[in-house]
View 1 (cartoon, one colour):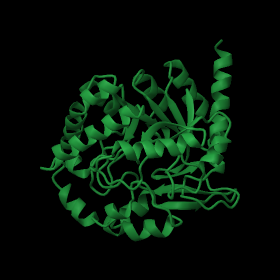
View 2 (spheres, rainbow, N blue to C red):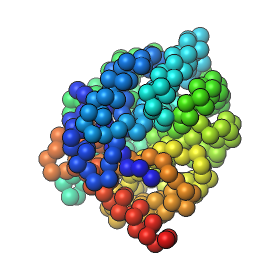
View 3 (cartoon, rainbow, N blue to C red):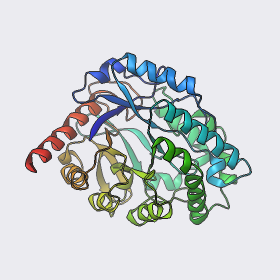
View 4 (cartoon, rainbow, N blue to C red):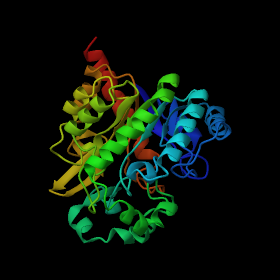
Length: 355
């Protein structure tokens, strides 16, 4: 297991590489080229410039989150193969740069959804939260304004201005895309990129849908154990894996996260570990990584990863805003640093218990 922290790159992140380097046990970052649009080619020079920036700070790029998959690929438009070709060339350039893990998602329109980016918890910290009753009343085409108001001035991944400007057009484009068509388009994409992944031993980790059910009439296809196993069998190659996100899969309390981990043995190159607190059906909020602060058993999750011989990358996922920090919601320094230390403490204890 290797502990990492997500870093959005120069000009996009309030957290510095110098600060990340000082978190015990964190040797590298999961990063991206934030200015790139889905379907656009990442050049080798751009990748190397980012890599050099990270390495000059004494860290490594451990993986990419994300090389975004365009809606043309997800929908299956006439531009699909052109965008897949760009994706293949991007993977080639990443492979040449020595980067061999890519997290991506296949969620239509919205990469993730929350109704509050700063819900105040009893201890005064603020967190990302979701309420289904609010979602049911929202016109999704008006989400642009609400997200921009809550984002503290930061560009939110998956909610980029370019994407939000096309919401009405995107909803129209997806009107004939059901879950089966979306799944088939995902398989088409994964089979198309197989050769370059195998050439450079690149592991692709699909991020589960967040939340783990359909919203706004849009299909969701990576929501539970059955979906995960189906995808792994559909393209039964080592490069086709999942990003095990406890918060996304855990948004549905019926999902048994340790059981999903064991079902995906050998196919988890990357894990996002965070805690959620379930308040009532359809309402959850994010919590500190400490198990008792939320509703999830972090020990059981880390033990399941140990049991399957997990040797991939982990990052502490969304943190609370604490101690007056102003940052991209979910991606401040302090709580994620505490989370990294807590998760490593669990891992150390599990290793010593099982000597």
